[in-house]
Image (cartoon, rainbow, N blue to C red; front, side):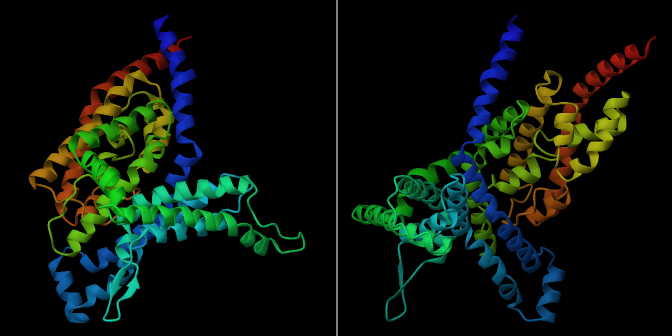
Length: 433
């Protein structure tokens, strides 16, 4: 009876609650906005690899073939792509949020949000004439949190005014593009006026700028919590528990966690490029390439066991079908095929394996046995061993991944054998006449 009550609570209350949270328009907007920046990060990472490939003979060959400054030229693209992360994020967040309201012109809302984002950035004087310019750094990873807040707040304010019909209406004969532009005139002006007032108010305080306020009260505290062993474990526990309930855990918390992880990765890139000590262990690549090997739950080891050691025909078939996707860190076939969702037999290793990966990788990087992630972002589908080398620029990254895969396989082994025996018994009983 208790089991039924617990199951009923899970299915009727808990799962719908998390589904509602993860599908809320603001969470979706945050997730989609950050996803919009991923192609530029990958492109920048590719050219960073070309310019900073960690083989001395390669760097010397390129220097002699071209010139000693060839790396700077190659990384023009890296600098350009990494330096607009915040700008892409505010545009993506605003566009996604406005688009979720069916009666709003999302493009106009996005333009207003971009202008508001630029308005929050303090200008710098350059040259003898004291010309004002926008510091490029604030358009990149340093401005991610500002981009998040502006993208949500300004877009909501814009949408509210549009719904209140505070617009300039044009005749029906006017083309839609022109009509939408004029409709955005009043809501856009008020939105920018509000941000302008906030900026003036902040400049009158010791904080001096909106980015400083956000960094002091939000970005730094959250970064200090997440860039710890305990913080990383809590993040992964939440992701695994949500996945166990059938909810895409990484997507559910991406809007909150990913900006911190991307900012940490960008800080590592800046330090690596300047030949300084890389500061952060817990980054986006830390989770994607060293923790979730084979997908959430670190299921590559489990899939290997099923594909090559299962005696039950069903488990062996699922393993062989899942091994290809698992190599590229896609594990929906095994999560829903076994299934792992709401399966108490496999719940413990599904949570323990990725947590163990966090502990071993964090400790190894902290002790200096394994190189930290250097700012390169191999796509999360990059196979293990290759991704470890690319993410750290060192063979120790690949060795760390190999160690984690072996450890994950051992963690899953006892539970796999138990499931295999139970399923084989069920199979044999079903075949009896």
